[in-house]
Amino acid sequence: MIVRIMGEGQWRVDNGHFDELNTLDDELLAEMESGDEPGFRRTLCGLLDAVRRLGAPLPDDSLEPSELILPSPEATLQEVRDMLNDDGLIPG
Image 1 (cartoon, helix red, strand yellow):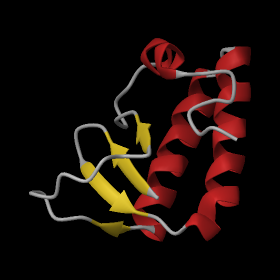
Image 2 (tube, one colour; image 1 turned 90 degrees about the vertical axis):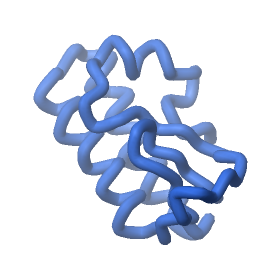
Image 3 (tube, one colour; image 1 turned 180 degrees about the vertical axis):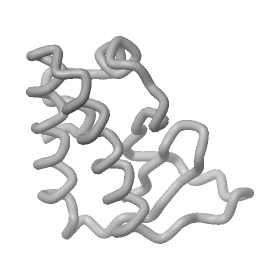
C-alpha cells in the first residue's frame, strides 16, 4: 500500500503491517474522541513514525496514487478530526 504523509512524501508499506498501523489509528481515534491532546499528539507521532519505520520511501518525483493519506506531524486535533471517516484515518 502507498501511504502519503502530508508535507513529507510517500512510503510503500507492506500490507502485512496494516494491523500495527490500524491499532495505532484506533488509539488515535479514542484519544481524539476523549479530547486527550497529549495522547493524540503522542499517538499521531507514533503512527507516522511506524509508517516511516515499516515503509520504504518513494522518490520525491514519484507520482503514485496514495491509498492512504495521513496528516502532517504538526496537524491539530481539529484538522485530523476533519480528515476522519467512521473508521479513523485508516479504513478497516
